[in-house]
Image (cartoon, rainbow, N blue to C red):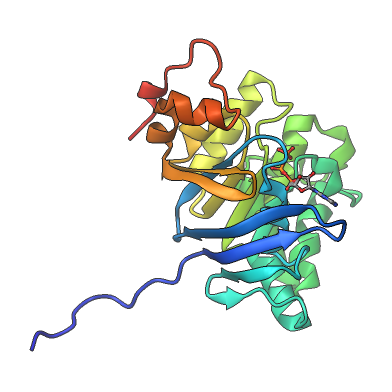
Length: 259
Ligand SMILES: Nc1ncnc2c1ncn2[C@@H]1O[C@H](COP(=O)(O)OP(=O)(O)OP(=O)(O)O)[C@@H](O)[C@H]1O
């Protein structure tokens, strides 16, 4: 008999099993989606308009529920009926929405970043440390005392990322993080995201951004997973991209995508 010297199996950051969902008007948006994302992975969620990407993301923290299947975040099952579990799930799943103004509503950047952890009961020096650390990670510490409305769009998006990081999430979910950014802001945000030691699920139509940031890509199309492979393999497959209405920008060479 051999001794079992293996490490305890690590719990995935996200485990979606057989998720199917129809909206109240009968529109079937997801048909049995399976998706597992391990700790520390960065995964791009690609797909045409109406594919079900938002519907999937809104299940991750229980905003949408009532269909079939199961979602677990760091091993904890999303249970919309259990308020305590749901609170913990919402801490674990940090969603950065496309419009930062949906997440920034306090008089100063500092108060916006403190809002989430303060709601969890964190106070005093620990709260200050959380806020400083989150702002530092996105390079926004210098603007901590400014009103968010006085910042540029790119800066507001970085602050929105900090509001989520301050919750110390299990998984950071980004909805179109490169949208409306100029090339410099786009590059700066990419560098920030690459520097974070956190599991990432990035919903995007920006295939070069997926190539730069995410070693793995999943195509969701018509409510089903149509591909789940290395981003390089996905982007090299022209027929796959065309059949799911995905297009590489002119001149972009998918072969240059890191393996
Ligand atoms: N509130 C709703 N009621 C009914 N149907 C909806 C609702 N929201 C979305 N849908 C439908 O569900 C399907 C999936 O939509 P979803 O918004 O999840 O797609 P998506 O991949 O996020 O699209 P996009 O890239 O355009 O944001 C579509 O057929 C859409 O029309």
